[in-house]
Length: 261
Image 1 (spheres, one colour):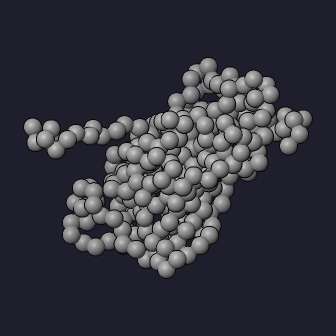
Image 2 (cartoon, rainbow, N blue to C red; image 1 turned 90 degrees about the vertical axis):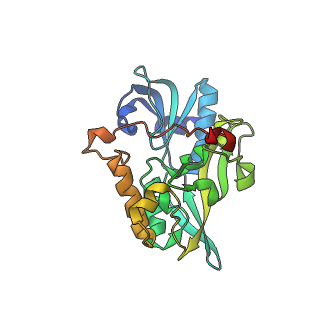
């Protein structure tokens, strides 16, 4: 995109608070919505040419905007689209764009009887954010189903694909929030789910909720959302108590010997 055309798409002095879950914070000096892969490169080139810091905004959870705002370029990822790209027996491979709402994607999969992410229902944010933190809850993590991630490499100035084992997934971590924290902008994610698979009921809260019964994927999703809602962990505009930055804590990890103590 020519620089002059690029400047026409960029907005100035845009409030950021409405784009976050906690609804506070200042304005962006420059702001651009991203609807496709090409525009990511254009935004980076503009920021470089103007000497601006760059901030990528997705669903606005796990982020707190300062009152003074952001004196640079904020790019808001709005890429949409979910598609089945391949099938292999019971395995179904889906590509989801980074700007797709995560919980809507989970609902999409559950409605189609695709197992693997049902316990991750009710989590705010976008698909593109889930590999960054290796999002997990109620016994599942996205790294269990992610096949590969397509991202824009800001160092090499090109689109790259990273397979699961190249993402360095760990407990709430990946290369995207550790060793290469500012290198990649995630564009889409490919997941492998199991058609007509059984839900994963391994987490204490879910085991107690079902008390020995055998739920399907739909009932498991409903249970997770109900449990989360009891804890004010489901974003609801009518419930001020649910307004938060999201969950960003980590459970402590100790050795078996330490646990016995």
